Amino acid sequence: MTFTFLGTGTSSGVPVLGCPCEVCHSSDPRDRRYRSAGLLETSTTRVLIDSGPDIRMQLMPLPFRKIDGVLLTHIHYDHVAGIDDLRGFCKFGDINIYANQKTVEALRVTMPYCFTETLYPGVPLLKLHTIEAGQTGQIGDIGWQAVEVMHDWLPILAYRFGSFAYITDMKTISDESRQLLQGVKTLVVNALRFEREHHSHMLVRDAIEFAHSIGAERTFLTHLTHKIGLHDVANSQLPPDVRFAYDGLTIEV
Image (cartoon, rainbow, N blue to C red):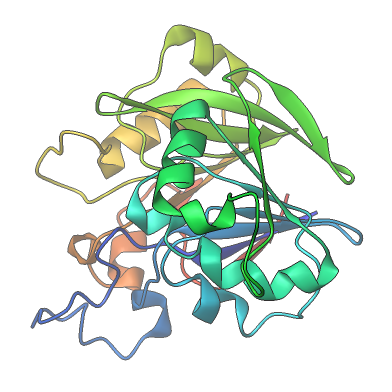
């Protein structure tokens, strides 16, 4: 099974519009970050995690074949704004979207034209599935478990796939949810920047401490701002088992 980082940036992306810093003007493609999303694949199944405003450009370079399911972490714009752009994949059938109740309810409000009794031609065909923290499920040959984490006051979902887990936008986690992640070998987790506390996101040191607390053997940091710094310089400040992810990176999990 492979996981591809489609995007590793925050809600602003990198480069940040109008920013003169060296990261935003870097020629290194690893310093250019679309909004966070990922694609988990086997030979027969594709699962998309989040579908933000950059998803069209993120999926364009990849083979055009069926997406078997979309797992959403939460309703914020940078994680769901590209759902309409998935309409091309309706060629293969309805798109199954899995999310917690708050996200499902909000999607029905923000995309009402997708959920009327009579759909106009060309509207994306979406099937919403409400899932709960701790719930397990199967999409093709990919098994998953939803794990609740807190994005400030907002409960959102992380996902575990066997020995691999994907977490974004986490600030805190309960002991119960932490237990569900014990034994994960490969962890993807958010790390906004090195310094200056944020009310709803972990910093790099928080992410490293969390990864070690659940026993992850290797960790990739995502949901990064331009304040992380140049990719090579930033990576040199991390322990050997932790790396900054970058857009387009594919790993075996």
